[in-house]
Length: 398
Image (cartoon, helix red, strand yellow):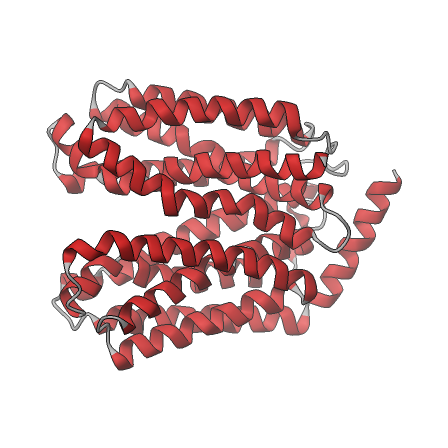
């Protein structure tokens, strides 16, 4: 029972992080008006958060001597500080700083949370446990972001962060009360944590994440203008489509966790990367005509969140001696992939190319991800999993 409560506490945390990260997309017009800046300039608030995610993730290297539960509690406190200061920001520069602070615990939370979820999971259910933790992020996309956008429209964008602060207090209480003490990571030195990076396996997982996820983000970043301009979808239907994509993400996350417990995690994320590439090729070949384009967009959303849990688990399998560093680097790879995908996906808009090129560019990136995933699961995964299991048994006996 404590294990289930612990996973719920972690899911509460990822829900908070998910809303904090993604709600800004719907708030940009209101923030731009409030601080008298352009919408493009207001978009820097998204970049500031992403930069915080990457910087914060690397800070995990210095936390290896602390208990995992204490790290999680500290991360929640940092996020609370960022959120409350965002709600009271009186200048745009202050807002950028508070968004950076809010992003700092994001990658760390997912990294440490994945290790904790694996430790409190019942035998053979590690992937499902991580999927439950990640479920909070998918719920944020389905309900939190649309609700936050509606509140900004009807009341104020600041109200979103007031409510998010109170939710953060609930997260803090649940972590303190429900998250079991799973100890520390195995004793190591700062330098030893990076030793696993001398092997090929973790780099294949990281590159599969970078290219594969980036390819899918290439399409999802511009799904609204693609479906409305290229697929003739009425603008009033976009919100409903986004909810559909969000629900697909929830389903993809939970389904992949279950499959990865039965199959190998590397094989599962390879299959979903292949599915994502095929879907993008179909988009380019068939077009984005409604309702086909909507179905294909939902499939991309499903694949994007179906690869997340098995990627997180796979990096733990390869990061022997440095699980915190591995967990941090998978978050960096994910965020850099998202940035790359959004950048490349914007090229057809910038140069007035056929919007079908967005899907082609995404598929090309995805193919690189598939190659890396195939090499990992074919040549390295079995050995990595065996070594990881031996280490876990040794840690348990100690």
